Length: 149
Image (tube, rainbow, N blue to C red):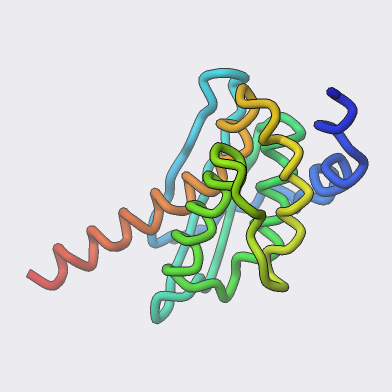
C-alpha cells in the first residue's frame, strides 16, 4: 500500500534532512541522478585515516531519497571506508534481495526504509546517497593509487 511507502517515519526522516552544505575543499565530489524520478544528490567528502572527517551534501530528491540522505548525513562522520562500502551493499541487498536492514547504532534508522523493497521503481532514488558516497570513496582510492606511484 502506498501509505506504507510514505510512512510517518520516512516523512519525519525526510523532513529532518540537514540544510544543504557543500565543502570548500572536498577530497572528492560525486553526483548521482535517478533516471526514474529526477532526484539528484551531490556529495562532498574528506577522509582522515580512512574515516570520514567531513561531509557535505546538496539533495534535490523525492521524500525517499531525502529520507535516506538525511539519515546518512546525520551519521556518516566517523564512519570508516569499509563500513560505508558494506552499508551500500547492505542497503542494496535489503531493497533488492529481501535482506535485513543495516544494523548497529549508527545505521539503525535505515530500517525505516525497509518498506521500499516492495516498490522497485523507488529503489534507485533511495540508493542515490549510498552510490554517491561510494563513488567519492572510489575517487579517493584512485587518488591514493596515483599518489603511491
